[in-house]
Length: 114
Image 1 (cartoon, rainbow, N blue to C red):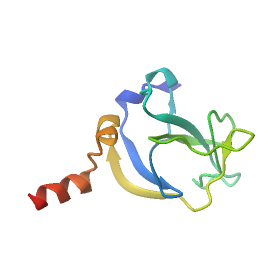
Image 2 (tube, rainbow, N blue to C red):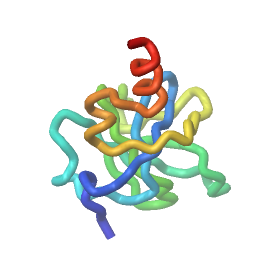
Image 3 (cartoon, helix red, strand yellow):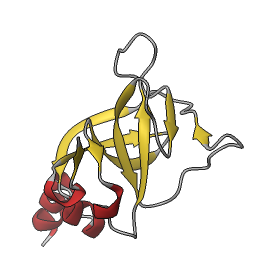
């Protein structure tokens, strides 16, 4: 079942230095804001939660979906193979918080500086 992207909370993850939002859900692409790029993540054959491949659409070994502010450099088969292990931050965000750059740890830093 496809989920409404605007109604979910996401985990902030880092893939090869790029901050992304991650959910285990499949997203209804029509609910993703046009300013974001949406990709499915294929898990490894061991089903260990590794980002083995990132594509526009994944059917087999679907691990989740990521949203990015910048497009990923897809290869000629429209796939991206992460070079480094992904980093799960444990920080949860809404789409609005991500788009505005309002991450909980950043908000705390800004408040302490004023």
